[in-house]
Length: 326
Image 1: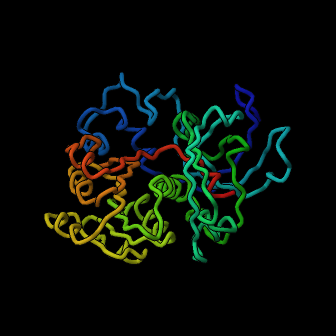
Image 2: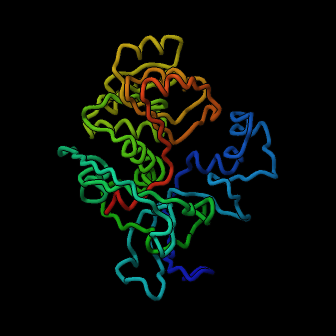
Image 3: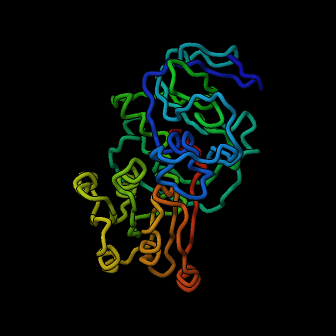
């Protein structure tokens, strides 16, 4: 139960896995593309094989089994793994950092306290308490490996995972429901945490009906924020059910609709042509935070909007999932 570097592993029987954009972007080579982003995602254009395919731009060694979102049961453990993990139903933290955690981290000394105010969210059901009921000393990984990208993942019957990355769960939620947590919910939580969202904020969420976007709607509402959801055609009902306060479609009236609000945070996982609109919609001192650019990563930015409105731009990728389940 040890890999070539001697990492202590668990061996999991996979109950279910989830397919997310990280898997698709890696498979198609989207992360390293220079153009034709939508065509690459739709497999109508082939990316340059000489370019890196991974999110970290360091390349992927093949063959590789994908799949980052994994729920299953530990059926075998390494010699030094505590027996309590055996036969446990677990969810996988896909960020693998090795035994020496410190070399993968830097410290962000900002500290914020967020209370869920008793909201019975899915995290509380799954892990016993809300991930929001803690003080964050923000710690983010610098150069980890990701399950399904640098390491084999869950598109299989079994997978070996370091014991530090398996989180025992006790929940009435189904395996399918829990499989949405590792990528989508952790990404959304990371976005909101790095943007320091609180009950004083009005948060615009672009792509609010998608996996990360819908997670962000719920987690922002738990924080007490006012949520403005931007969605595609015929998707308004999806985010209304999640509690969004205002819902606008992506159309020619979007800029004028957003002008009605004092937006303090723009959360974006879409990019592309609507970037300029949601960036300009920010009020003085606003924060733009992004973890994706599925429409296009190439955007137009007028630096005057950044400079003279004292706007913050925040990237949010590396996250410590255990910080949400401990």
